[in-house]
Image: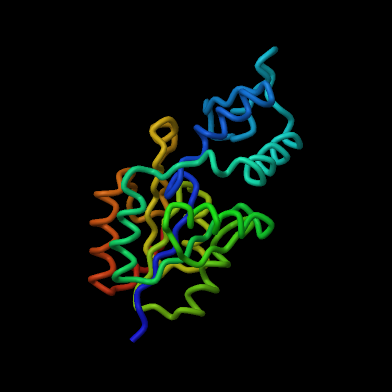
Length: 213
């Protein structure tokens, strides 16, 4: 019988990202990172004048960080211990929106922390790649973990039978991010998250179909 499947994001779920990213853009680019609204772009402001960066300026910074500075990242407390426990019961795939060009760097980054799992560097909504993983693994039950509400909506649309856990492991931003209405639970602590995930795996019951509005 096939094993359960856990599909997890990396940044702010397994590894801290915004804090090391903020430290880097401040020190190297004269940019201050402040989460003040739902827009990542608006959170990046020039230190000298306070004006937000143009949208076209944001991706080169993110690309530069993931290309050269991923070693600045460090694990979310409890994440890797939880993954070890979960991995005894389920297959784990890391689905991360760093793009295919940074996929190997992400594999290497996680390996430095003795975490080894298949990694998919994707782009855009995660519903379609989650659907493909479900068709590939054919698990009796699957859990999806991500910090971004938009991905929970995407997965809810493409793979509604997958349990969805909204997890934001960075305290600096967790309180500023509303719980996704498309997730089945919002938990920002790995001890509690591990208990919730293990319960779903033990039950081996797919997520209920969404009720019509």
